[in-house]
Length: 462
Image (cartoon, rainbow, N blue to C red):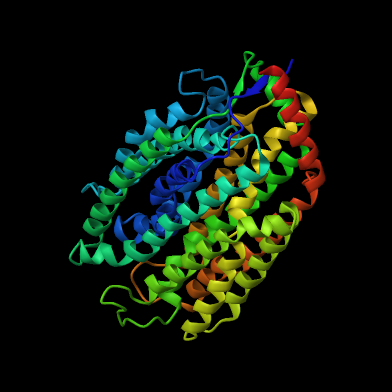
């Protein structure tokens, strides 16, 4: 008898797909803000030294990464009338919004007090992020038994995630000035208060509209047994390394982006539609490209294998990112064009790779008769957090080593450090991520064989 059964094989309705995607919209109201603005907020607004902020982000993220495995194990063993993963979304939604907002409350502390406050609030936020995002990501692995359906769900998820990123790219930079009346600290505080409320509402929508369809009919095995199976899962290991290098890239480049636009690029101060300046337009155009790219993920996976798409698109993204090292400071439109096509190339990959993670959960059940959905996703999130921790640390440390000083004209050395962080280092990391996918062994044929055999076994266990 199989250890799992399928509650329903009905086609998932659009409302549930949108509801599932709403969770990543909620997540990105904070996650994407952190990627782009947090290091800048800590150094130029809150007043923490670049090396201290980088070290704080590195230490807290590295510590938090180890909680993902624990959370994955807890989620796999959760048994409620709502399922394994959905209840965590309900329980953590409100704390997630409140703690995220508190990071930008800007208390009037001493320099040491500000650093301690940053350590405490960011650590709490990362714990809340783990407690809600590991179950949310794992939900993709049990919401449907069909690989193609999961690919569609992942596409919805990331289109809606990029919608949040568009809002952040478009409005955080101008709104901090509009809402704050020139006071950046107050502007960040009010803007993030709006995002906090929206994130809570959207998480609750995700909980209320989704359903778990692959359920266990046996008690889960011991954690030691789960871990043994996990580390036999070759495709999963390949994606762990891919996620590590990808998030290293995101941490380094994301941390350097605002500095690149503020201190290196010669951006026009003219406003578009009275709101958006050159910095905001750079963010907006890139995010629009990501949305277009994400919408292409489904048709692309119908034509090409997920593995080949990940390898080619990631390498192409790295090549285009590397070109930024050679773009002159006054070539703003060239920056916009290269950034648009670079983000267009990488746009389909988030939906593709998260569908690949779900296939890894199937692979473990198919190959070893043991499904470790929570651990599969938590392990990948662990690698991503380690990558992001090291990446944002690298960005901050490079700024410090090359002589960066906030809110002043930068030296040639400091500008070189900003350019390297924004281009060459991310490009190298993306080539390593692309190379890692070579070892992902789930081809289209293997995926079809798995789905056929697993569905037959689960029907017997129903």
